[in-house]
Amino acid sequence: MTPLPPSLISTLPGGYYADEGVFALEQAKIFESMWFCAVRASDLGRPGAFRTVQVGRESVLVTRARDGSIRAFLNVCRHRGARLRTEESGEVRHAFSCPYHAWTYDLEGRLIAAPNLARMPDVDRVAFGLVDVHVREWLGYVWVCLAGDPPSFEADVVGEVVTRLGAEEPIGNYGIDDLAVGRRIVYDVKANWKLLVENFMECYHCATIHPELTEVLPEFADGYAAQSFVGHGAEFGENIQGFTVDGSEGVDRIPGVGEDQDRRYYAITIKPQVFVNLVPDHVIIHRMFPLAAGRTIIECDWLFREDVVGRDADLGPSVELFHRVNVQDFEACERCQPAMSSRAYARGGVLVPSEHHIGAFHDWVLGRLGAVS
Ligand code: FES
Ligand SMILES: [Fe+2]
Image (cartoon, rainbow, N blue to C red):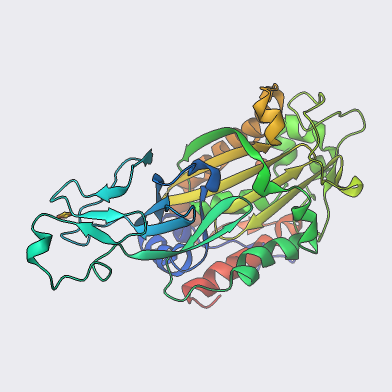
């Protein structure tokens, strides 16, 4: 094979994006081993509210206990393994009752009832309770970790933001915990999760597929507005009033946003499955749920000040801008996915200089999988 010219470096081979064996390894070594952003905490409004989410190969039941704390369990009945809840979300009054033989667990996961349980006094109700999953709350989201001994949340999750922004304070200014979900759109994307991460990390494609975004952020048209510059936020164009589809004024600015953050857009990737987008009047957060080598569900939340959402302000132009960006990006990724198993892509493709930082992501993936890069 002829060596690559210095301008180009290789991507991962196509098989890494299409092979279910690689995907199974990623589930084990990445999604089931790291902190995974699962649920917006405000979606669990009161005790008994629950959501089920796919984390790696496991279904996880996330709920709010009676004391208001958030708990997460594997969604598996300890009797004979029935899935406790199959709905994506719902609410129980006091307990989760298995639909098969009616083993029943309280909101803390303890086994509290089962047919004939009184005749089995040797059955320990805690030992046969639901299997706990580690939980953390940050940015108003519930993060779960399936690992027995979770990695440091501060290093792996907060650390990613600090590496990108230079400190934790800049993201704190947006008060993301207190923002309200103004809009949520769920996308079912027929593409490998790594194509989505790579796409989010580069702007070489911005001029081609994002006419509205490059209008608002002219520097993106050069293709160099990468996330590799620490602390850098892309500046709004001169005639742009707000981060909206037509450049019109948005809604009320988030109070903590600093003057240096005003009229700027910051994109942050928190590996392995979260994208954060900060603009002065809202925050957009993507959570990816990889389901197969070629399929990823993305839940995207548009978060605004509570009073803005409460008074029914017109969020349309704000939401529409990034919704279009999402559709444009996801179509591009879907366009690439079928080619991942083509013989033309057996050795992968190449990254141009403005994409070279994606090479570090590839090295990170290979490192997690225990492969030699
Ligand atoms: S499998 Fe759940 S009660 Fe039997
Ligand atoms: Fe894009």
